Length: 94
Image (cartoon, rainbow, N blue to C red; front, side, top):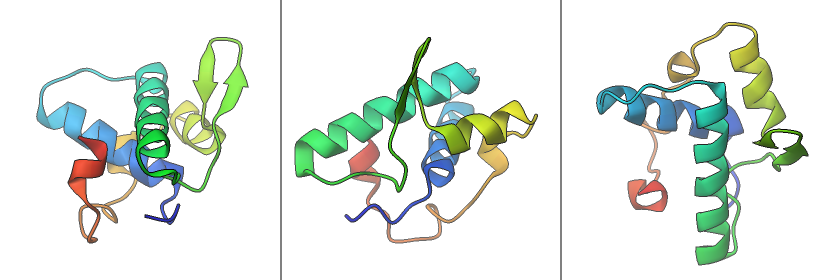
């Protein structure tokens, strides 16, 4: 899978999965889960899961577009339905 997804799309998918399973989430948790998903897919297939590279910030890895979106008070789970409506292979995030 080429890095065809915006990092906010992947973060929205993760937040939607957390919400569906009753797991609380915040910006930090979304950032870390996105980083884990990014690393797993990169190690497994050599491909990036999103179009943005993680940045090394003081308190851990950060995807700046996701950070800015959530920091402005937006609920990332409401960002997009593009992944759910696409042919995205859910096994890649499982």
